[in-house]
Image (cartoon, rainbow, N blue to C red; front, side, top):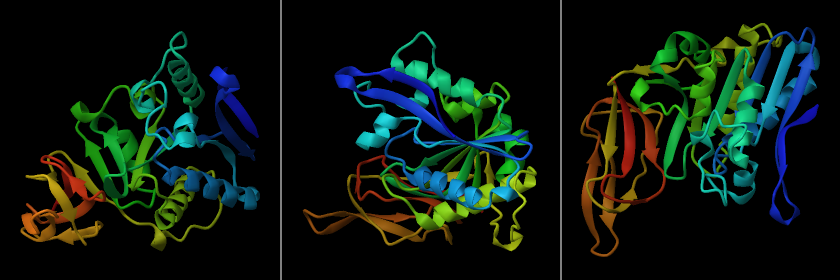
Length: 308
């Protein structure tokens, strides 16, 4: 059942609406929410929303509970391929929990939070931006690790990154929900403006695995197919930044172990035909982020490595 949780009129006869689909079967006691589309250039969640609902509806007798799917929290961004909310100059994930008396987008954010509150679990799906390619991972505020790390293990992802509290923005959807007692896991994978179907299918399997652990999915899960993620907390991630501007040329793929001093790529100059910098791994570790967009500037993030 499709319902509208927030709607208002815009200029030129347009309507701004945030919708969700509700699938309920059996007891309906437990409720899990899948949200995505907060940033309009992050599309991985679109495929996941489709595939998870398709699989459940095809096997509805195996489902016991309520699934709420919100595919586009920022519908204008999705429609215009914009990261933020066009015409409002806003990052949707920087205004939660919103304001019922505020602007259109603040009212929308407030309605979203109120609608999600009380869920047994919320999965907030993001892609990376267009500059970086990320392995499938969960990012968690260290203050919530005792609650969120255990369910994160079931999601069939490669990496669980527990952030220091100082790095977590209080205006995000996840922080707004977790601070009020509604557990919210943030998933990030792939690269902006693209859909990686392999990653998508893996996450769908992980979501069904999580639903299975919660008693909401009775379908058989082959546990041998579930990835056990690498866990990272504290000062265990090394950041690799560009020392100069140029073109970052690399054939290096993430999701692998790199050795200290191993070349990750070169910053090259198309004008002079010279290598400006041979970018090397500062530590031995798991490479989980690599730059996807070739143009870089001094200080640009090129890679992240979890120290081993």
